[in-house]
Image (tube, rainbow, N blue to C red):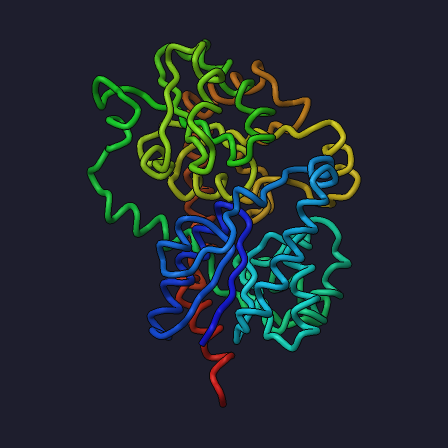
Length: 378
């Protein structure tokens, strides 16, 4: 069979790559064409567009780049028609993928969505369009099945793919600490604080300079920035250069989290990855003033962090927009490093979180089996 898969971000590339591996186990002669990244290409797909050419952060940035976005949409439609897939598989990335879904459905193409857009956060009315355009929705967050149920739309919960990914990493890298060598540390005894500022230039420039200033208040710790693999080396140089106890790694985020004592993390998948590595974290978010005001008006959820949303309470502290200051980060970081009661409660909550996300089993395998079974002639 022929599969056309679209992922527009680093996390989509990760989950897409694992889905591709599982699809190829079920369908060894499958032909897969994709929009994604290096991981999806390495897994066996033909890469058409890299996600680094697609990522625009915030409302203002999207408006500014509308000509490019429309050009990409047009190219994508032509490429899909030329490829003639048996199924179009969309991974999150709603601004682009929901438009493609609506178009593809009209072309008579099977549309499958793996990792639901966060319609429960904002623009809930988009569910009406999803019901019309998406033949099969596979969700990875426990509360999403109930959310869609109230819209009379049956979806399938397959578990969260990160549980399997991180468990496998821990087994494969047990006892390893390659991050020390990568960050040029003199020994393995150094206390590390991980900085995960995101993968897009716009968000990194908003948050990383504030996060870095905290390093001066923690001379006994070494701060390590997880660089985005899609960005050029020179981009980070001037940002990191003024700080003595700061270094960086690239393509070693999991190695970094496996040895970190704490982490400062931007919102998104990284907050969940940090929690599954059982690392105490502070969530740091700051966007452009215009984008933030629009988001505040549109978004109707209590938290921005996936950990807190899934647990339906504040497990980790969120510092958003004007609250993201050096003073506030320093205060919260000291708490998660030194307050034993806080640390114990955090570990207890992390254990509950993993238990919730593990109920579905191996998400990538479940999703691949569901897709393959759906497409097979009855």
